[in-house]
Image 1 (tube, rainbow, N blue to C red):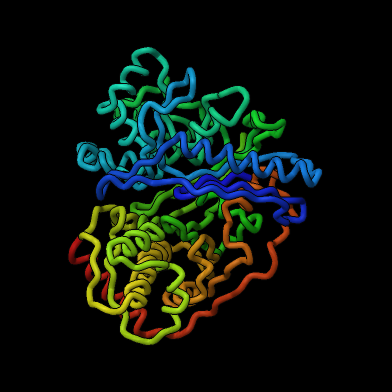
Image 2 (cartoon, rainbow, N blue to C red):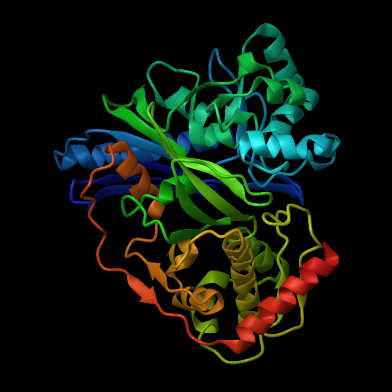
Length: 465
């Protein structure tokens, strides 16, 4: 299973019992050229995918293991422009965190409600439409490729499929296509009105396919690729089919809270609606809240305040006593339920390095709770939380999440949920899906000071937004 994320690419080989039999990991770079300018090198990303696949195939061959199918999960909302003759990018990859077209996008504010009802997404520069149009308007190589009839535009997933599969197809899955803001959640295909509105040519976009489908065979081996999905939506299925009253919290570069809502999608004015699974017969939908600054906020703070090993030091910081300042976390702009740039990120108060680190970690939880509160006010049933992602390894963070939300939090034994989730989808939704050992539960406790900080955090955002 291939998990291509913002800062790294992983490949894992799982057996029928859910055990990891082989794995490989490769870091990738990210270029922050300004507060709203975030790029990556698409060639470096595909090279990292080749590297981890090659390592896992070699390990599997040495152990005489037979691989039956593959799955691919990718970072959502990141887009690429490439030449469909040879697969070479004709512009930098624009990250999901990139907001360079924010001002340009405001001209469509009068259409925001209609766009939300067609796509399930609020009008936002984080999604692909404004990024793809930016390519067309600002990159001469993109214009040239389009004039020659050689231009391909689309989500990162489409670029990876072009390179990974023998046929070099122009394909993309429903989940990643949906994050372009050009995709109709009702028809589950590209929307003619949206493509015309944003000026993105239909002929440049990959063909849409269900999340669970036979995409073709990997060119590095005769292995069928049977599922393609976004990273967060794959994580929902890490333990098999999710429980209806459980919201999934995944904390990586960004943080997300996703609630499965069944086979019919519902509109919400400030939360996202999307789909987590589809085939040619049906689809499964989610309501989602998004926090742009999670691991990205910790990286920003560590750089700004010159704090080394910030994540590592958090384990100790959560266990110490002392007053915790407030960190106004607007890294990457405020996601749901605000959808605005927000005030400049800043620390209110002072303290030692550990106190600053805890303040940043708490700000992630505050933004998650704001989304959870919005879900509960909408009448959605949530009784417990399941947490995954890199920061989920921190006991103190999980306990604070339970205290802040007053809900039990379950952390599976394996917190890297994306690969396990895409494996379940690629395997055809097996009824018996083994859990990766016994996880840990965190029961909510009283924490008055934490709740007081949350209330202050919300008041500040409401006053300044």
